[in-house]
Amino acid sequence: MNLTQEQKRQLNSYSIYIGEPAHPLFTLKTLKSDPESALRLVRAVSGAENPTVAASYFSRRAGMCTAFQLYTLIVYEEVWEGPNDALQFGAVEEFGKLSVSMFLNGGDYTMAEQADYTEIIRKLLQAYVKEVSDALLTVSAAPSLTHWENMFGFLLYHLHVLLSDPGTSPDAEAVMNILKDGRTWEGLAKESLFARYLRGSHPSLLLNTTVRTTCCHSKDVPGLMQCGYCPLKR
View 1 (cartoon, rainbow, N blue to C red):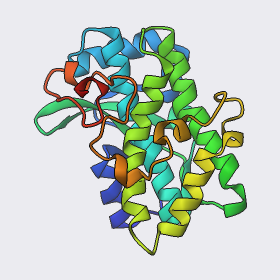
View 2 (view 1 turned 180 degrees about the horizontal axis):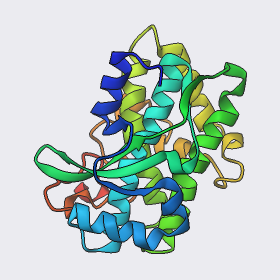
View 3 (view 1 turned 45 degrees about the horizontal axis):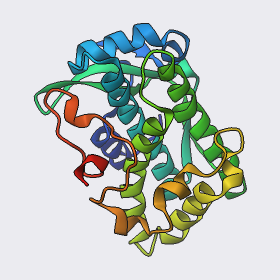
């Protein structure tokens, strides 16, 4: 892929790598077609025996990738496009703990026209959150809102940073407004789940608050801590 070193560094900081994993687990295509087998591998790697905890753990990892897609759309006006079997998941040791990380093994980053942003964002939400959530719902008890909020947490931080920078603020606000528009969510939900998540507040005001309405179960994964947005802190 024609990426700069800075772009690769940013990808790696969000547990996203280029190429084939040394220890492959499954692909996005496999997850959607055989979620039971995929979740069994997630449970083994994460150490989370409970299927609901493991499902939420996985959608947090996938949520990082989805939020970063929106980040690159804002900053570089690019988006990664590739088939479901080109997005692979592999076991990688991070900070002394085995984790499920993402690998872009194919596809490419393409330039995006601003006139197409609404459709691009809808497709990202469909492919990487809704379809993942739908698959996980068949093998675990974690509600779909948990998976959406798992992605929103990473997106919230990105928007805090980008809206604070005069160079990226206009594009970040444009993408945020698309996400808050109920029309973007047609076929995904009855309303904008992101607008409901924000509750009329600016992203920067929601950092380290109990903005979530569901628990991500991070506290229940061996070696991880309770997230800063947990509603159980109330």
